[in-house]
Image (cartoon, rainbow, N blue to C red; front, side, top):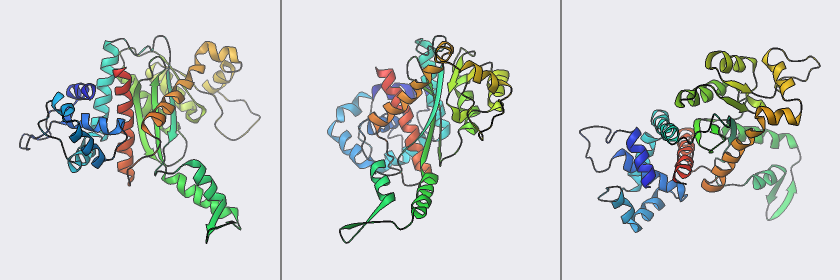
Length: 312
C-alpha cells in the first residue's frame, strides 16, 4: 500500500478538481485499489478489510476509510488508459533509476492471453460444451455444431491482454487491453512503441511469438525504432514458397535450438511466466460485467503486478 501510494504520487495529481471535497487524494484511492486487487476482494469486501485495518489508511494520511461506491468511481477514473499509462511511465522511471530494466542484458518479451469473464473454470466450460444435464441425468448433445457456435460466441466476448515484459526483472512496461480473439499483429506497434518510449536505452532486442509475425511489423521495429525484432515466420496459409524479407531471415535465424538460444529468442518464455504470475497471484477471472470495466480490471492487474515486483 505504501509503495502504491508513493508511485501514484509521482504520476497523478492530488485531486481531480480544486472544487472537490478533498476527502481523499488520487494516490490514496489508487493505494486502496491496489490492496483490493492484491487481496482479491470485491469493492464491498475491500471496504470491510480497510475498516478492520485502519492503521493502513493512517499510514498514507487518510483520516477515514472510503466506502465501496467511492472506490468504484475512483477505479473508473484512475484505471482509464491515460492514467494507467502515466502510472506505467512512473514504473519505468523507477526501474531506469534503479537499473532494474536489464534490457542491455536480456530482451523485451511480448505475449498475449485471455482472462475469464466470470468465475468458471475451463474444465467446466469444456464439459458443458459436450454434455448437458436434464432432470439430474446427463445426455449427449445431438450435434457438435451448436457447441462450436457457442464456443465462438464465448471467444468473441473473452477479455484479452497483451503485455511487453522485461525478461531480466519481469516488470511490465507496456500493455494492451481489449476483447475477443484474433491476431496479435495489429497490437505490435502500440505494444512496442509504449515500451520503447519509456526506457532510456532505445536500442534493444524484442522477442515475440508467432502471433505478432508480419513483415510490416519488422519494418516498424527495425527501421523506425531501431529495435531488433525476432519473431518466428509461421503466420499465413501453409505454402511451399519460402518467406521473403525479414521473415526469411527469421526462418534462417531460428532454424536450430542453438541459434535460438544465441539470439535470445528462448527468453520469450519469460512473458509466459509473467502471465502465469498474474493469474496465480491475482486470479484469472475478472469481476467486471461490461467490456470497459473488464479492461479496467486488467489494467489494475498489470499495475498491481508491477508493484509486487517493485516491493520485492
